[in-house]
Image 1 (cartoon, rainbow, N blue to C red):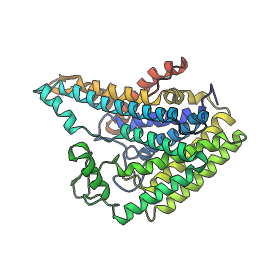
Image 2: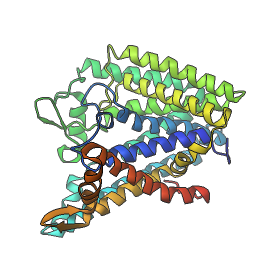
Image 3: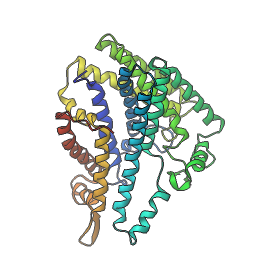
Image 4: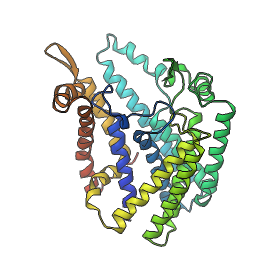
Amino acid sequence: MANNRLLALDVLRGITIAGMITVNNPGSWAHIYAPLEHAEWNGCTPTDLVFPFFMFVMGVAMCISYRKYDYRLTAQTLGKLCYRLVMILLVAYSLSLISRLLRGIYADDFWAYMKGWLPNMRIMGVFPRLAWTSFFGGLLLLTFKPKNAPWVAAVLLAVYSVIIAVTNSFELTADSLLAKIDLAVLGDDHIYHLTNAAGEAIPLDPEGILSTIPCFAHVLIGAYAGYLIMTANSLWDKVNRLFILGSIILMSGFLLDYAFPINKKIWSASYALVTCGLASQLLALLIWIIDIRGHKRWSVFFESFGANPLFIYCLSALFVYVCGAIRFSVNDVNYNLWSFWYKGCMQPLFGDNLGSLVCALSLVLLMWVIAHPLYRKKIYIKI
């Protein structure tokens, strides 16, 4: 613990935020290294670890945070859960609106273009999923207590897996129950469409309604990891507990993969277990490196992101939106500021794929320049 914050947890959270900024903002989506792309359907790439790692960390932090309330579901703790739900949803839809406003600058009819925002706004997405997962994950944590979190998580994953198996929803088709629920509840204009092998656009949102259920289990597993950390007798005990937990659920996930394939887009039970297992092992490794071995100097870069994770992530998105709205021509070639940074600067210097990666890393570095002073001054902007 450093300054009443778990240093290794801040570092892991910072690693995930830096990873999210990197994979979401390449110089060109046409030029991406394979590990920086999501798996097309079944399978898991390094990029597919970023979001679930953040969700795992959210569970750990939630367990630590609600300890002072003795994990009791009261008007105060329920109010905190509701406040966080509303705040994250407001941020999500505000970012969507700002993006629309900036794109609308170049529309022939600005007001007509803006009127189309609400009828076509994506309701789910990364931030809304975080919001609902934080709310219901916290509600379950306070209702059943951290020591019972693994059992609640197991029930959620088992029920979800049975539903997916019985309805044969492991395929990317319009007949999938996930697609049917998203379409019926959210409407075709408010959900993301995935493209199947035949090139058909399927109305199945990768952050859809039904596939959010296993995310509650994901947070609860993280919360149980937090419980193991807080009840440990020593640093070595923390490392051992996290490594054992991670090994058990990682192996369980790989075994479950034979029946229920690892799949991020439907957030299968095997995917939840594998990613939670890896996150638990990585957290154990970080505690060993930082707290036991005392190698802390390297971690400052990631601590800066981990102190204000959602604020920095939002800021990176806003920066790219603004860059995309600044358009100009050079030698009769149209650019926006972000595309010019890639095509005019990074691509000539580093080539296609590496230049695209360097673009993303340059944004990470810029965000660190903002995040580090906040960290040094102990300014925490909560969302």
